[in-house]
Amino acid sequence: MSTPPFTKPKTQLTWLITGCSSGLGLSLARLALSQGHTVIATSRNPSSTPLLVSEVENYPHHHQNKSRWIQLDVDDRASSDIVERLEKEDGIEIDVLVNNAGFSVLAPVETASEDEVRAHMESMYFGPLRLVRAVLPHMRRRRYGVVVNFSSGAALDGRDAMGAYAGAKAGLDGITRVLAKEVAPFNIRVLTVVLGAFNTNMPSATAVGKVPLPDDYRGSASDKMIQFLTGGSMPGPAFVMSDKDKAMKVVYEMVLGEGIGAGREAERLLPLGSDMTARVKGAQEYLGHALGEFKDVTNSVGIDR
Image (tube, rainbow, N blue to C red; front, side, top):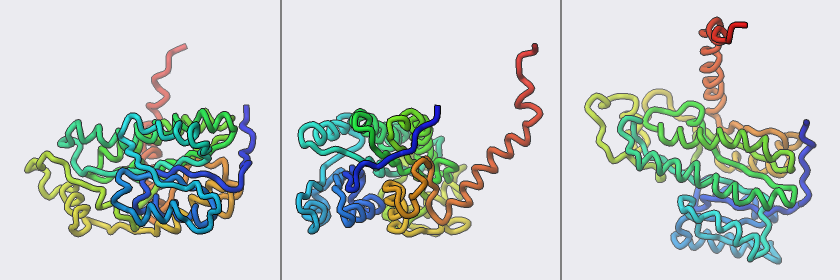
């Protein structure tokens, strides 16, 4: 059974965006506001960014501005209540959910504590999933919605010392691939944006694991990556940084089905960033090598007829 083409019944949309206090989330929120959309911006601590809160809530061109800034900690198991409050109490229909909030604790897999690993899963797997599950019944009833999850090249092939982060992102990607199939018949689009390195303040959302590195790891790729991401020099080839505002313009157009997004409404995976071509090719080579190496083995374990 084929899925009918996606339609966009509204011109102006309402966006719920997590992690808006800086970086990609703030860039996308500003762009959506500038184009006349309603933005529900969120962050863990709005009181620390009063000027940004005022910018969103008092955006000049809105005659009936429903845009607002809401405190939201995606780790909170009650975080999805925000959706019910907006939809049922405030009469705000969420058309677009953008899961952007995230962080990283740097540690080799061996030394990452269970609490640190679980914290990654809470923020970048369960947190986004809670919000997705909360908006879907409303989107399904209206037969329209767009879910955008910001993933990372780490989900394809994480760098040393970023295993917990890579695992959380890859986990969300995996469940999102299934979700996209399930909700497409309801005119709900799901897009995973696999991001490379951008000119954001991600380093400020990066910490070092509490367990000291064993001596064997001194001077290793993990050690060098930790040193770099906490202010040192880059080991090996340098990161190729990309522009966050250019990237968010692409995401915006993909959501609206305009510009770059015109005719691409059915696309479910968007690699974005100057370093992503090489990383996607690396993932292709990883799978291709395995299939080539074991081509005589893969199908050799069938049941004899």
